[in-house]
Structure formats: structure tokens, C-alpha cells
Length: 248
Image (tube, rainbow, N blue to C red; front, side):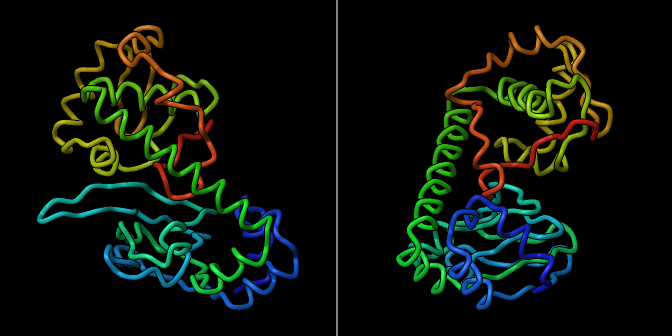
């Protein structure tokens, strides 16, 4: 691991408040590895050997059942996955694969669990992160169960605008196929929905989103704090898609 990696890792809310001695001990047992694109990092059902910290690149978390797959989250730097399985010494409920060349810090799960019992501030940070991820999953489940496909897409596009600072134009932070899977749709259904939303105040030009009538889009999406947030704590913990950024 490069010494210059440590400040970025230390800045994560998971490690920020733990003692320096314990942080150093945890990092001493960890190591960095570079993975090529489209490589399976973990498979659902396997025991959780490592907490993964993404420093460069991006990783898709996905689940499968029979012949079906769905995107659960996309992880970008600097963030972690999958904490819950590591703490519980349980099988992964999701698989993970690289979307591009990716550099990852691997933290042994056994050391993570030992540190959870030893460092109170670290234990509090773990609980807070797991709680944020749980709330994110509940919000996602509510959106899937309570909204139809047009409402889900409209709410997602509107929330991305707000996360980017209220901009009226931004680039989608992930490929449309990943977005479709995350929203519980086929790529074809997403394309049809995006075309239909042009009459509801939003236009899509490639990966560029242009909001032409925010009020009309809001009338369709009906934003709800108990579904859409804000709950930003889970964005860096492998519980959602990346969000759009101002100027992107």
C-alpha cells in the first residue's frame, strides 16, 4: 500500500475517529491490489474474507438468481464494500465485478472484527455506516414497491439534479444498462420511459440529462423525504449508485 493512500482511507467516516494506533494496525495487515476490467472480485454465497476499499476505478455490486441478474449498487472512490458480511462473518449476499481498471485495498475481515471489539469509536462508526446502508435499502425497496417505472425514473433524474446542486443539466453517473437494472427495468423499458418523459419536462441526449420543466417533472415524481432522502451517508458505502456532480 502506498503511504499517500492512507490519508484518503483515514478520511472515510468508517476510520476517521478510531485511534491512530489502531488505524495503523489495521492498515498494516491490509494490502493493495490492482484488478483489470470485468473481473469478478467476490461471488454471492462465499464467506466474506476482506473488506474492500475502492481507491481507483469502479465496481458493480450485483445479485443473481437463476438466469437473472440485477445491479444493486456501483462503488466509486473512495468507498467501501461489503461491510455487513465482514462484521457478521457471513456469506456475501451480493457479487462484485470491476467496471474498469480498479485499485482496491483489502482489509482482512478477521482483523476488522477484532478491531470492532477493541476500538469504541470504530465500533460506533461501523454501526452508523450499517444503519445508513439499511436506510438506503429501505428507501430503494419503497421506491420499487410504491412507484411505477415512469415515477421511479422521474424521481431518480430529479434527485440527481438536486444532488448536483440543483443543476438543470448533468451527465448520468453510470451507464444506462446499470441504471435500468438498478431501477428494476430492462434497458429497453428504460429507453421507452426516457422517451416518454420528454413530455414531462426532461430530455435525454446520450448520457446528458436536460431538465426542461422542473415543476412538471416534480409533479410526476412527487419527491418524498421518506423515500428520496436526503440520506447521503450511504453514498460512499456501496449502498446506491454514484450521484451526478456539478459541472459533469
